Amino acid sequence: MNALGWWGIARLGLVQACLGSVVVLTTSTLNRVMVIELALPALLPGLLVALHYLVQWVRPRMGFGGDVGGRRTPWIVGGMAVLALGGFGAAAATAWMATAPDAGLALAVLSFVAIGLGVSAAGTSLLVLLAKRVDAPRRAPAATLVWLMMIFGFALTATLVGRFLDPYTPERLMTVSATVSVLAFAIAMLALRGLEGAHVAAPETARRASFRVALAEVWADPPARRFTIFVFVSMLAFSAQDLILEPFAGAAFGWTPGQTTALAGMQHGGVLLGMLLVAAAGRLGWGSLRAWCAGGCVVSAIALLAIAATGWLQAPEALRPAVMLLGAANGAFSIAAIGSMMRMAGEGPAAREGVRMGLWGAAQALAFGLGGLIGAAGSDATRALLGSAVPAYGAVFTAEAVLFIVAALLALGVSLPARQVSPAAAGLRRSTT
Figure: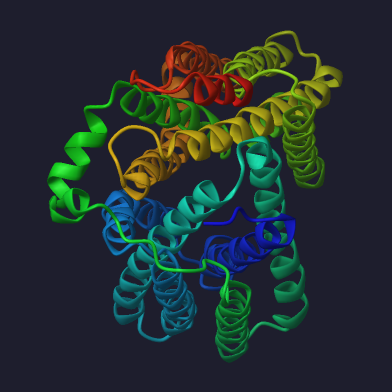
């Protein structure tokens, strides 16, 4: 099977961008419509978004289907179709809530389940295809390109939807959502056309094993198990600050909504910088993916402690650089972790790439679903206990920093599976880790 060149990697990035364009509409635009236009409790869209993450525990099963069948494209196509239907269904449900709240809520639950299933099928198989078809030296830059294209998909969709959604009407919302879903599916199909190549049959032993046996084999592999725990812990720490950073700036320093939004933009800029740094390091051979994973987690912990200290010391001038540092460290360890996933996907039991990638994707999704809720609930609980907002936020930031240190220790303990390899293969692995 020939390795993908940069054009092939960019085509997979375009599919990821299409996936992201549907998801961002459901997690941001619909969230705002429910809370502002429909005056529904903010908890409702929060629970629906958490539901779409929770559903993604099925990722290993989706990956197993690709392992047994030998092709990933059908799973990506099917996943994108389900995602597109779920995205439109979520918009229709939101519009329906204005006149029939119960029926609209029922449709919203079904639609967000479909979104989670579609992301699981398409996202897992896309990452496996990327891992199997990209040469080792290109993995970190390839991961960066794919994720940057996804972010571009977020930004482009949000900009265009914002332009065409005003003035808001339920009918306009459904029209815009349908257009986004149809275009995303069509563009993804064009990008995938002829990309995967010939069918590659899985080994007979792998095809005969049940999913439960395959999952047990992967979980029994110490590096895969440890990396799964690392992904969960690091992404839990990563996502726990999402819902509390802007409120912290407002509570601690009295910043306006415009100022806190700009702060979030600065953090995202830092994430982009960190991603590009790891991509460049991968091309130049500076450091291993393991070192970037661990180092990014350690620097993230330092940045979180610095953010907490700005509140304790009443030093608002230090908040922006601390947030920029947090974003850069988050971007660095995230891309290094994705590169590590791609490197490790084919290790261990034969023909289990999909199960392994699915297991790590499920760990990430569950961490994201829990992280925002835990961060927000933790700040509320500590505020009630301490009687003040600033120490409460500081306590949560400190707890996240501890999680990042634990994640760094886990990253340092991840190693390749112990098995016999040729000296040449061993040398290649040492040069790419």
